[in-house]
Image (cartoon, rainbow, N blue to C red):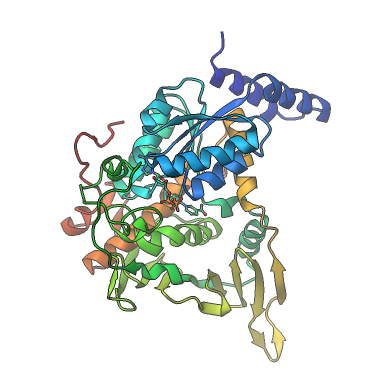
Length: 437
Ligand SMILES: NC(=O)c1ccc[n+]([C@@H]2O[C@H](COP(=O)([O-])OP(=O)(O)OC[C@H]3O[C@@H](n4cnc5c(N)ncnc54)[C@H](O)[C@@H]3O)[C@@H](O)[C@H]2O)c1
């Protein structure tokens, strides 16, 4: 008997095969859909996880088998909502290892805080499952490397939640940049000015709320007493769990220049900033940061300001490609081009605001499920998520060391910098072990 993955693979190979008639295509698709549902489980159900699962459920083949969270309150509420949609209560787990052990689960969505992306992803790959993992791929450079290795070793389809890759208007912008119409692009700006980036006011540690397994929430990261700032959503501003606005929004936006300019590793990275806006808040990551990457023929900048919501070009966040002929500005709302002028004439076509269709996320999920069937690499394959996470983490490490750093791809570490290299890999708290792949 074929395993589920083999079944999906053979049907998918037919699907991926060249000139299938529309009728045959529909029959093959219907065959997969009717007879072989794709069993999905969600790990980390609070905010983005639930959103991810709901979009997965919009794909006809997808069936929700299980949901897993270390907070029973979140798990109960979210599962009730999902059963209202599907008419069936999923299995409920509070330990992701039970998800991994369940053989009827083909696909795992990992939407835990960043420090909890690596182990479930690697373990799911080892168990022959495919993974939709949220961005940033993980909370350290060593983790993203081992995740890439695991995906390749076990031939898992791993889609990273950088959904812009599936968005039509982002694809249009990338095509425009590649067309050369903007002229030589010497400078690209990416920025995120968000109020939530200032963190929250200091609050005292308390007892852990009922229903929460905080030791499991901390997982491989160091032990702490419960503090509501280092918990749902606001973990982003603590180095052990997240990387601040740079790894939260930066990966979404830095991904676009890597894609459009067809580059991965900059020649150097430097950064400066601090907790300047709201020093009284409980936050470790900077609320004010500028990172500068030099790619040899253009610079790429990340600029963030927590507690501020009015950003560059009248947008709180975005990407600007600055070329000799014109500037393209894009964010999730849409894009436009302004032109430089010579003797009063525009050097490139002026393009007024082109609104986005806002279908990025559902298309991203659809692409993932298509790749689960075809075994093709997904549109934001783990390797692409790895490149963006690498430069985002490198920016944070440049900030934390105060140094201009260079990455050595042959050694997978920074050149001649022990202080920076000491920040590549977290030390996992027992009993968790850094995965060996
Ligand atoms: N793609 C996007 O646009 C987008 C948007 C928001 C968040 N995200 C990403 O999604 C992830 C989750 O972010 P969020 O805002 O939903 O965080 P959140 O804190 O709201 O939710 C995380 C959930 O994971 C649970 N959890 C923690 N450890 C767990 C474990 N070991 N097993 C099972 N559950 C566990 C928590 O209890 C919580 O319910 C992050 O990586 C974030 O960067 C992506």
